Amino acid sequence: MPCNNNHTYRQQNVSQKHPRQATAGFSLIELLVVIVIAAILFTYATLAIRGHDPEEVLHHEALRFNQLIQLALEQAILRGENYALEIHINGYRFLQFKQQNWTQIKNDPLLRARQLPADMELELNLEDTQVVIDPAANMGDRFSLDSKINQPQINPQSGDHSRKHKKSTDPQIYLLSSGEITPEFSVRFFFPTTAKSYLVSGKFNGQHKVTVSDL
Image (cartoon, rainbow, N blue to C red; front, top):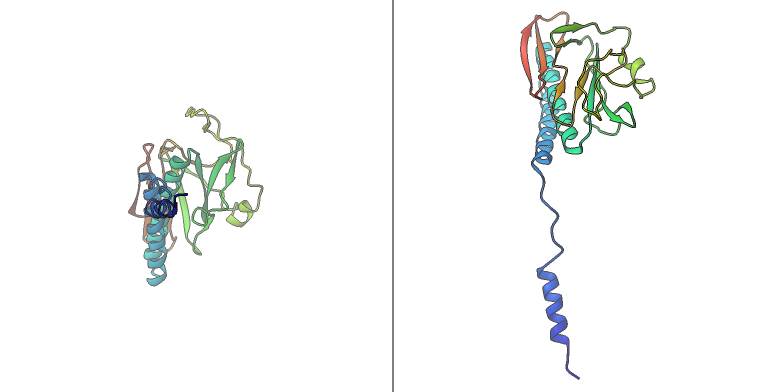
């Protein structure tokens, strides 16, 4: 009976040379998400190293907000889901559209609810119209409520961009899976006692940026 040791050796050798095929490489969007996360972590490190000059703190909070918007947009595109932003006078949070409701994102350490440093405030403009943010609706009270929010002004499933009556509990800004931002917005980060402020603005085509501005 012929010996099959050589055959067995060849099989083992082939299996060693040809391991299980590697999984597909990262997509461009996934790489962009990694880059955005790295930029946010760099912002954290820089903020921790630098001093507590009010204008520097404003600048870094605005940069972080801008980078988180980019991260949320990339995730919305990658996952085919719709995100939203809810702005408070002293902070903000990201929401996700699931089961016909807007729900606060809770399991993402980066897109979690954000409380601003003491005395820093936000001012919101939607399509060049200033929105009055109720100062009594502070972060602690609003975030402890049921995370389900009323049906949005824009239907995320149908992509309907028609204007409808907007409930006071709707998110103010929508980050859609198409990469679009609606409505166009600007959020001002400021201290009442400083002369300069920082604006984060977003356009319908998904572009957004940080600029410095006088109060």
